[in-house]
Image 1 (cartoon, helix red, strand yellow):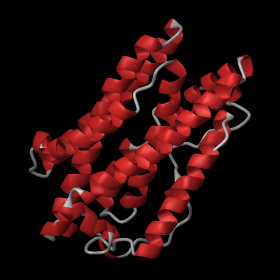
Image 2 (cartoon, rainbow, N blue to C red; image 1 turned 180 degrees about the vertical axis):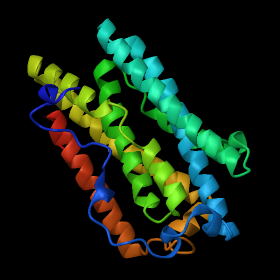
Image 3 (cartoon, one colour; image 1 turned 30 degrees about the horizontal axis):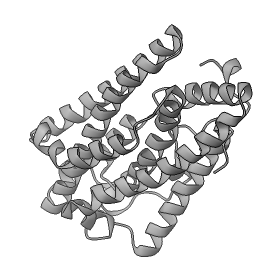
Length: 256
């Protein structure tokens, strides 16, 4: 999308809520992978994180390819196909990284299949617009969560995680199409706002389930390794995620 094509309300992009100016990294965040991975608990947590992300990207590829069938025009179908291709490229990077560090990618992904497939079953869009809102709002909530985690990781893993969470074109495309649909038929806005609120709850629950089910990952987040979050920081993290969600809703022209 060119600069002249940008909507009046610019969408939240891949920067997310964790992109604010932060102090210089310390602890594990200041180390590279070779150094940080000497801690077996940290290594296990990173393998879990990469496995969850890899399956998430693979599922996103499948979903976008399926959603393309609902596209009202050939142009829209091609745009979603391009996004699906980008998601698969992200999956390949994560799969390759797992192999590079001596882990079997399928084994790393398997623990997260049930939770992520369950999320997508519960939030299957009924039409084209719901699919766009899910791609923009729902996926962004999960991405914000992983970005918050990424700031505590070693420099090599952090760079990879942030790269694969980069926007694939969802933001501008979804905002343009959804706002145009609401302008054409204002009643659509109420339905999509309710849908987006449901996605918010389901996405947060899914992120929490992914962490809670894996001991190494949950230990990393609550301070056992990788300078994890304390309870106060967890509250602030979810406040930032909620604030970013509210901004995205506004960009779509929806009430949070």
